[in-house]
Length: 424
Picture 1 (cartoon, rainbow, N blue to C red):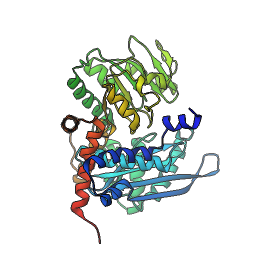
Picture 2 (spheres, rainbow, N blue to C red):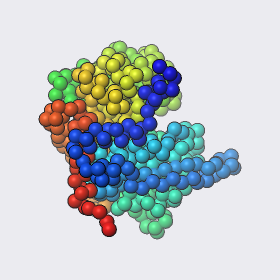
Picture 3 (spheres, rainbow, N blue to C red):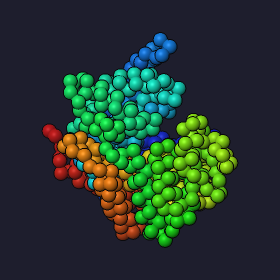
Picture 4 (cartoon, rainbow, N blue to C red):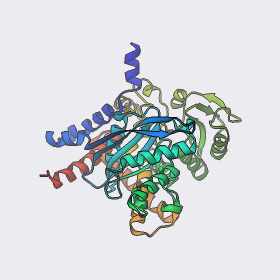
């Protein structure tokens, strides 16, 4: 096998993956060709190149994107990521996945995504603020509380959202907190939002474990990507369910301990040292090797295309819960399904974040806020009922969980598009 072919297998174009996933559902649904073409493409794409003053006095030009895939069911919704490997095709794929994610949990949103090509870990806080405020200004022609609502994603956080909200509000002369979600609570954010993605992952893992007869007490867990979603999922599974976290990783690599890793101690260590490398009581492990460890639950919580035809046959976990967006390729899906692995697809597994983002947007709109207990109760209800819908569809159609989720989501978006019709 040539090096180029191997690279294509392990790192396929994410937008092509997203379209192929859509095609599988569209074929089974028998969508009309005109509707298929509409849903297969994006609605609006904005590319901007903008200057930012750096601490050393230089001015650097950054490239950013905002893509809206579909708005048939409501305003566009989706995160903004800062990463050196951001591409337009990646953002297109993420926007499409957001459309299906919102539809599968019945949120009144369409899908969008944004990104800036940069390395925020090498930028000061002042430089990150300058980049964010200028990027927001460039995006101000398409974002808004009733049109397109950004949120945090890879390497962005509540502070980033506060800068976006403030910049947008300054342009309008008054505060508009509902323009973004994932903000600090003090400026209109929602209780429970910080843990929502990881908590939603755990709610779906609980349902999947019940379905396959797995007792989470004592179950072994491996988490690739120990950021917000991954660390929260690890902590909840360990402290609330009695699971044993045996391996975790970040972009620098991973650590393994057969006896178990304390999730809070790992978060504290990473915060002090910048990575998990050298965590006391553990041995190093690569991100690739972590994926194929013998364990009960595997949580890919890093970037897309981590599980492909290259390694899918070596995956030993009984449950794969996709906290990341697009971590599994279509070829890998078939292999995992054939091997009897329960894959909880990203558009349901990690929908907790956008669900509580929706709660935040609603609370901002009405200027009335709920307690964290109320938030978590509402989140559990949506996640468990949505998982049940997907599982029922998978059994009825005899397909894997991803195809089942897409059948539900694509049908809902297609129906909304058809009902709205064409203008003019």
